[in-house]
Length: 157
View 1 (cartoon, rainbow, N blue to C red):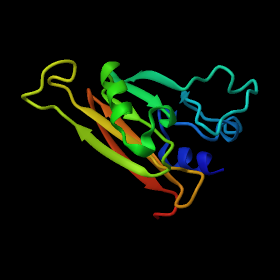
View 2 (cartoon, one colour):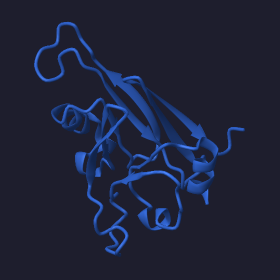
View 3 (cartoon, rainbow, N blue to C red):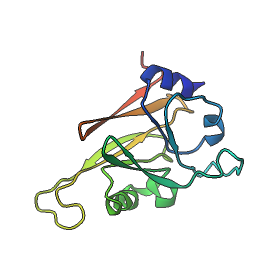
């Protein structure tokens, strides 16, 4: 119900689901494309989740987004390994879950930086958790090659 409520409020062009709750997600009829990854609690192997992997590189509006749950990168101990994976895959945005806490950080560009990150920026964000209070979700707005992350709560009216 909370996923449905957030989708009705935001009316997204696409939904990115960062894991933990695939079984609940399968009950929601979204009227837009869905990109989902498995979380560490999505161990079930039912027909719905069997084709869903641990991470996915999605391109929306010309923006490359690495979507992962984050448990395999140890995000509860720091975002460095997950950010490095996003940089290696030339992502513009990293969306992760696992910590259940809203998070946003921008890395780069650094005019002195060389190598794979040179002249690029990486937006790192976590929408929090819609399943636990305060029932947070994120909105990634992509337009004209630019992107912005904002978070919301179903109880911030």
